[in-house]
Length: 122
Image 1 (cartoon, one colour):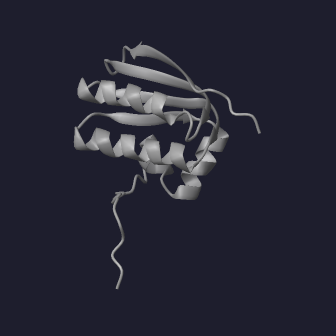
Image 2 (cartoon, rainbow, N blue to C red):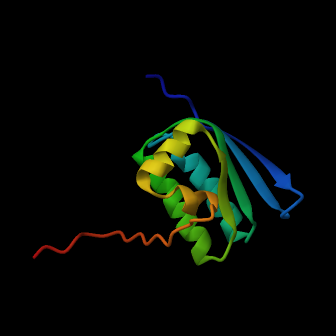
């Protein structure tokens, strides 16, 4: 499988006053830093953000983890962030991980708690 570079097109969103980041390509370990940097910039500026993943053909666990952390970071800073639209492959990954509604702002959005660190051993 060939890896497609992740390209981003950032435009203003007149409805929210925020930005739309349209991603195209593969979102994986080798490419997620590009999207993560855009999210960090807009979160620091308290800019509402919609990330359009309709052009993403592949997402691996590193890409999914980056999206989960971005959503968590946005919530911690009280900045609106939604991932929509999403490609069918991204939707499948979100559903498999049980986070589709949370990441896309769906009606059944669960409360997701992400904790990092070393698990305690008995």
